[in-house]
Amino acid sequence: MSDTTLLVGPFNRVEGDLEIRLEISGGQVSAAYANSPLFRGFERMLLGKGPMDALTITPRICGICSISQSIAAARALADAAGVQPAPEGAKVAALLHAVENVSDHLTHFNLFFMPDFARPEYAGRAWHDRTVTRFTAGQGSALRAATQARAQLLHIVGLLGGKWPHTLAIQPGGVTRAVSLRDRARMSATLRAFRSYLEGTVFGAPLEEVADLDSVSDLNAWRGGDMGLFLEIASDLGLDQMGQGTGRYMSFGAYPHNGQTGFVAGLWDNGQRRALDTSQIAEDLSHAWMLGNAAHPSQGQTVPDEDMRDPSYSWCKAPRMAGQTVETGAFARQVLDGHALALEMTSERGVRARVVGRLLELARTQVFMEALLADINPDAPFMQTVSLPKSGTGEGLVEAARGALGHWLQIEGGKIASYQIIAPTTWNFSPRDTGGVPGPVEAALVGAPVGPGEDTPLSVQHIVRSFDPCMVCTVH
Image (tube, rainbow, N blue to C red; front, side, top):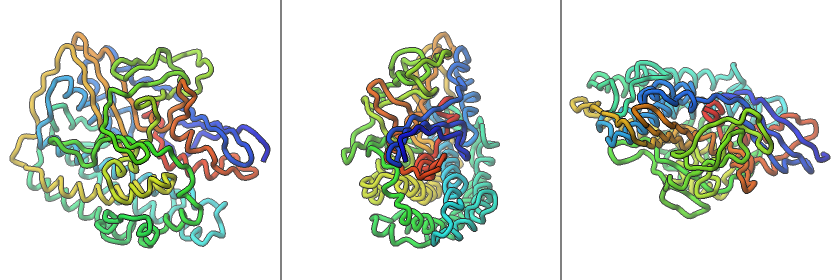
């Protein structure tokens, strides 16, 4: 294939709008430029509002990770007030968040990622007929089973949050819904049913066997459930070597409650673990349609460049940690948490690793939710009174399904003077920075094979979907 430029997008089965411009040379991608083409401006909407309005407005950034936004906003407000939520309230918020993240992982695997392998281009592969039966969009038996299991699991959010998405149950001081012994029994039954689905359908084995996988050789030998089918496909197509990242990972720490987290925070740089220091974050604007200078989000602003001048090519900013790109998401969380399988898979760090990270996290988070629910004390308070200051700053850090999510708040005169958000997809799908360094997905796409006549290369779709983009969160 001669040198050419290819515009891929908009992508289907992606939350929001995404376009990627590819430079093709010698039958493979030589450079990629990710564009978030729809500006929404939630950070502008928040200016001048009462601080508590953030709890109503920010969850509406996204309909599939609204609890992540709720908790980040509540944490930023609590930080500004200098308080911690009531211990039992923090546990309930963590449970609500875990349910949403697990639901996102399940949706991504069954409805977003696996249907690409049912395409007719893969006809004749040993696994294709089984994949068509299980994962054909809108028809596959796995899709129906996943949708039903997800709906049942979200009953927990209905019980604790009143509705999903956009619950107002999560507050700076805790949660609005106290949990009774009867509630705990009902939720325990829901979790048992979800465990049964995971073990019978997704993994074909007890969850503890998945969580205890500690080597790539054991992973390669796995044959059970839909995970086994994915691993067969990954081996045949070489997904372990496709879409390799830089080996730098970040986690803000998942499910904080009472001085601990479900999965720990930190930075990972090609085998070196470092403590997380969010003061080293800066948002580069050199290739974003934004006005202003690079700054830490607590000092930053969101001012769109209406003229959309070159060399900018995206509404997405380019966040950097200590001047470097970092990848965030389920695989990053498992690496930072020190899971043996994830650590060994940092040597491949491609499409397979990202998907295995989500599957591994499905199993481990289910176990976490069961233990967390059993530890909730119905007799303890679930909320404490919080008085917000007239002036102050706050930082709210959480782990959404797709990775590190941060809210940075400034209050002046009792109103929001600044509100900045960096979403997981902002990290992963950032444009180039002032040094010309591509964002994580742009770098991962380099080397992807492009066959003759492919206007939407399959390899590009697999790589992009392995990051599970949520573009509406990216551009707020």
